[in-house]
Image (cartoon, rainbow, N blue to C red; front, side, top):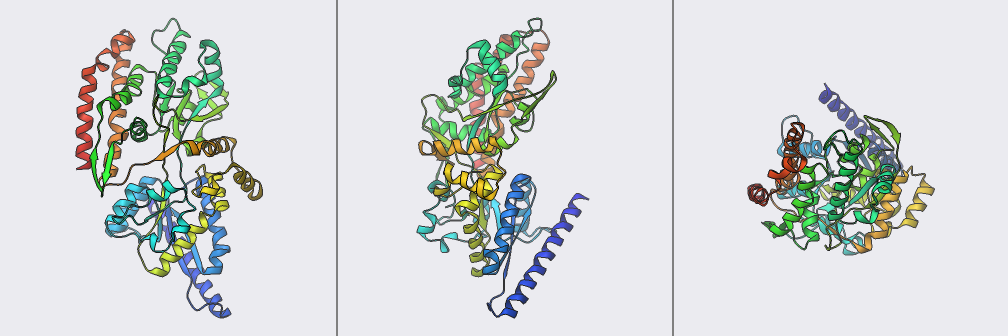
Length: 486
């Protein structure tokens, strides 16, 4: 029933768009203002909630101003989740029975865009954008979109994100006062592990009559980012791509540090992952801190609803911890927009909309509501953000403001990184996302069974933390990655 309702809704939307196009055409012809007919564009995206509201508001503004002037009408359609959107695109591309026609524009991460580009279905944006027009955008954002074999542009940057660390300050203050830990201890992953151990031991000590019932301190949302950025901070690149061909760099010493700073504390119960996202785990009081996307701060709770009660909390936004002594590298992520190959008229109209959408003040209005980072160099500015928030009445939460301005202030000191695209890149990323995380979850469950049977934490964990255990995982991980890229 939901699919039928969704299809019916889209059908009605398209009828409305067609009707509006007809009305615009009649009006323009009657006035004698232009001889060409208006262009009606469809944009597929995955925005929801505040993000969708912000996007729809800007689309409405475009349609009533620049779009009206230039004869361009844009209709945005949410396809649900990122996965739903990718499925809809693949189904349309394949001409699957019951699928909708390909849109004019759709949101796409680089791996998905690369697949569609390999099928020859994306417009060459370099045909419509001069070097001067591209120079106003953050350089690394533009470079990420150059996924064609000839290095021409296929992905238009519209909004980006990176990672931050979010902390339940209220419970942290109690813990810090009792143990002497400080925020400086959270500057790198090795320090986070030490603090997490101290927190486990502190919370375990609160119930002296129950052994080994300490609580986890920290978690992270994206394990793929953990691998990609962690390796890059240590001077390596796990996916080395040249001409669309990938080779793997599985530096054992670097991967051992990644193992030691995630798998080991997960097995010991110092780190945790319980809900769908780590912000969920802060809400339930199961974690105090996590590393997640800048957009995730919108979901960081104001209230903890734990078994022992419900109470308000304050927050801190902090830089995402890297590895001690490593390079200051941060993840660059967030979908761009791609234009489907059609004809020059429709492609030009699509570019007109995307350029308008990413004008500094328009883009900041979207980012202020949605938690993304703007894509123009001039827009990464606290003073301009303040101006847009005040003049356009952007309802920006304090958490989102603190997050975005912290990135603005530190952007000049960080190197933003995302790996280049390659065939089967999505499958390889899934290995990074789940291979170690799933093993850590399963092995922690086994440890908990041993603890329940009366074993000590040290004895319960011992079989999982040996050099032999790491070597076995290292071999399995390498094989899984190789299978994925092949």
